[in-house]
Image (cartoon, rainbow over all chains, first blue to last red; front, side, top):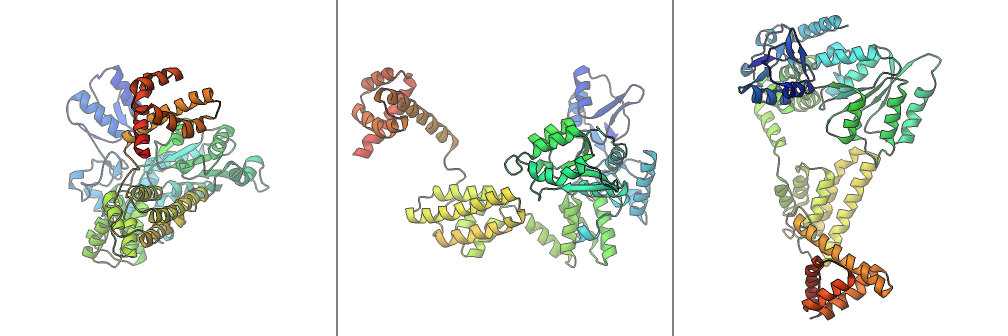
Length: 118
Length: 404
């Protein structure tokens, strides 16, 4: 299972104890939307709990700060050294990094996000 | 320094930790008397201090900062922060207290500092922001429970790359894409480290840059470093061996000590070497106390040069501990038995236990010698358990050998 950090996703019923552990690790639950990993969630713990509980691989991928799409980490030059679990959850997707002035686009997006979070 | 020259001027200019930045700004805007303090937590070079300065500027706060280079004892903190806490100035400026690197506040150097921080948290008179690098520090764990925590993560490598490219452009410097990527890989999400490396290595070709970075990464094992140090052909070689050894200064001194005391040096050489190691130890202690960390740069050269002159080449080999732990434990247990005997004996002989141990026990053990039965009766007389027998027999044997 691959999930974007900060995006809602559904899980099967895992039992009370697992649910509590996931909440403690920073996962958020909403009855109508499902689960979401917050910015300061402990992704390492969440991944290890879910891998065991689901019996399959579970991965978080960063999302593009500009267009909100998934970032294809395996195409990135830093794939070997970037540990998704310990870096900021937002990155640049391959399309957005190819923009002529990606840094100014990034700054503008930050300001928009800030306005919407006031 | 690029880090200072190109320090972001506004919060918008920063990169990475976007949502954390916004949440922190919202917290500061909504702060009211009695609110809990903020704790900015995350690895170095992720923008905690920069964000604090920019947020204070933007929201019109008068920032009062205490960082690791200040002595943060209770009295010093009172002196610096007291006016902000007790009175309001005529201009009605809004004070904001920022304690950087709170995980570096230790009891000995910063006596009463942590208690003062706890009082500050309780009072809630002015906004209090703290920053820490590590989460598993005992004091930080206490602060986490009482604070609103804002977690900073390492900056994604693509952001670091873009930022460096932008600064190179602004500074009129050039580096190849491959060189920039090498720097970004080396920095591992630490923006400050990336900028410092980029500034120091501009002008080098990719190959040169790659070789500099890989030589920096050359992590010698402790054993290799110290063996190289003790077998160095010159003072400078000895210094270089110590310099590349990536352990704390205190551990360098400790390892020099344990290696020297375990190498069977002649008494004269050992005394001179221990004098120099003792001096280095004193310096490290003083630096820790005064928090003058910049003075640490002299330690490697001081230790290397002074010991190089004293120790014969190859006479010392690396030893990590003065003795193995199980041996230490055994000795400690045996020592405890002797102390118990001394205490009991002192009551019978009406003397101090120290005198009993140093004067009477050796004679008694020599007289009792290898006679197990007499030894057992003696132990019973003193009211000790039979466990004391083995160490006593051992001590008796040692004394007998010494006498012979």
